[in-house]
Length: 319
Image 1: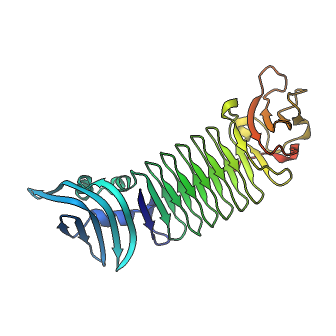
Image 2: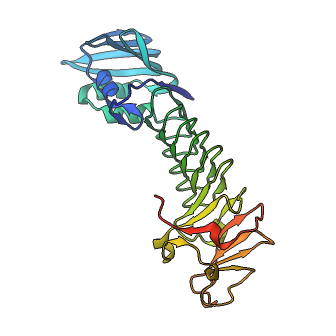
């Protein structure tokens, strides 16, 4: 597992969490020093980068550079004597690095660095970071971060600040930390925990487990899931938290759910009923017509079985 530490200046251009300016530095060296276990590029303006590893080999053929063997285990980028990026615990073939130098391919280098199971830590001001491939751990800082897991089963912690966390593919664990955070599980069976603050939790596809934590939280639904894919809400508090329903997906007008559209029990009783809440089981259903012609769809299970009321459900667009 690699350990990524970023120190990206505020306002620097960022692509997938790594400053593109840093990638340009790595792929456009003025000089290159080579040893059997290291490759050191020295650039202008006091910038240098070092790739370290094992069994490095360099080959020059008619002016073309290649690395026929070697394994990269660490990368360090220095700017005026200060470490700007430190990557350890890598297990990458050195060969592709020559292609990035030859083709000036910053985006390819980003993908190469992020292809494994990584641990990434933001140490700068508010910034963006994407895990890429593998099962990654992304840790934000005290600012407002945007963190995305990419493919794999990822763990994402926002830290302090008002963060935006995206699990993307895989079965992910998102933890907002402090601040008013937005957590989006996306594909897979995800665990979303808002922790402190007034958070918005959107499980999206998959059977997700949503825990708001402290604060007035909003649990958002943008489609009615099939029964065995319904989300689980573990700590809903009536009168404090809200269930947010997308008006387009559910074909309903915006606003607080009218009392006549809410029914406690196990089935709709008239054509106005849209949401049916079975307090005995904590299951919340959506009924598209209230007639029974179309079966009600299990939307979520509220495991603490709160005394849900119509005003806890709001039809609104939040994202």
